[in-house]
Length: 460
Image (cartoon, rainbow, N blue to C red; front, side, top):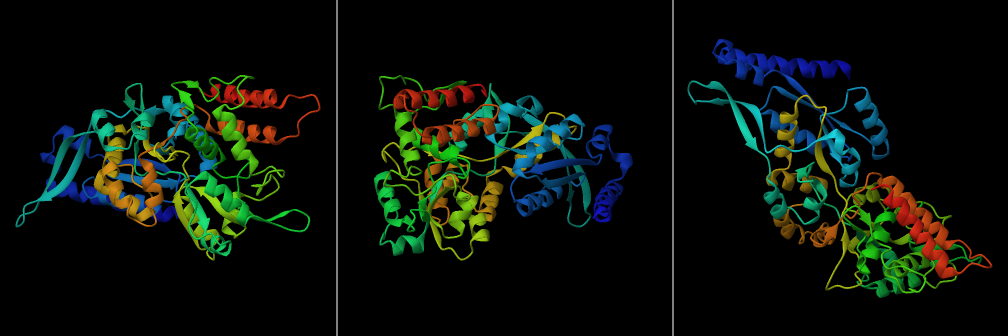
């Protein structure tokens, strides 16, 4: 592998030398000579999108042959440690895929997008006597106005911080409802649920128990935290649909107006609805902390519904090729005023990069609407661009996600999404714990929600 990499770099440099030889180096100005000095951009991506990224690299290098771009896939759970170590050792990448939920955490490590970048292009002109030309261009980057008009609403809210842009997206994802077609048919349910009442009814009909009362087929994985993928997003969805503003600026606000006299606070209602699916005394009981991972259970045909994102589809197909599933938008509490959850990534430039102009120009190139369209088609993701969502809403595999994108939002803009997720997981466990002999249930539960809000506030 090392020999192949060295050979690739050698060929790239040799090609550049030949190009410059064709021009005649003596004809280059000092600015032109400096502009085409060979550089290397290191690019870390989190998702399994290497083929798509490599196709953009090849296309970009057609005009920028002096730029070598090395792409590396980094696992989500490893990113934080690897990135911190790379920064400390001064070997950080130039370009990184960054969750909007991480931007405030790493904001001092990232380079804001400039208004324009200056890069060199190398191309050939002339049909009969071809001549290689170096052109130094100043490429404009997307303006704030362009971003606000072109992308769905959550994008500018996420990537623009104090008037500066810290990344550009290539896709958009939303939380949708997966369901096992065969298991729904066997339960006599011809149409997947559209409302939460219909959903609860479907869960009751599809959950099965053995003689000891153990769950052998779950209607859905809801109610707990540790063994449910996307639990943070699911409870956020339920609260937002119930009229809650999760945060206002840098202040967590989902407990606003909660006190011991308020038995019907929307946060309490959402938490109760969610937790009932893991409470044996409830008729929707279908899950508990002893069950396996929610995605694995669905992939194995042990669960009928699963709440996940578009990126879960290939994972499910790989783990459960025998399962026939389909996808619908999540049920809504109020279809006239829908709420949905966004989860996506943006491409950002690291502040320590020595080639910031080329790094941002490559991101500009990748996120051009025409290239975004190619990327989402290959990866099976919804587009973040409003105009492209119209066509995707007619695509059977993407419609559920694309239909929700316009109203999807990402409320968390703190500095530690992992701790915020753990705060909700602890809330679920505490809420399901037995009530003490002298405990007041309402006071206890309000305290649990308040504790989770305070912990999440500390991450802002």
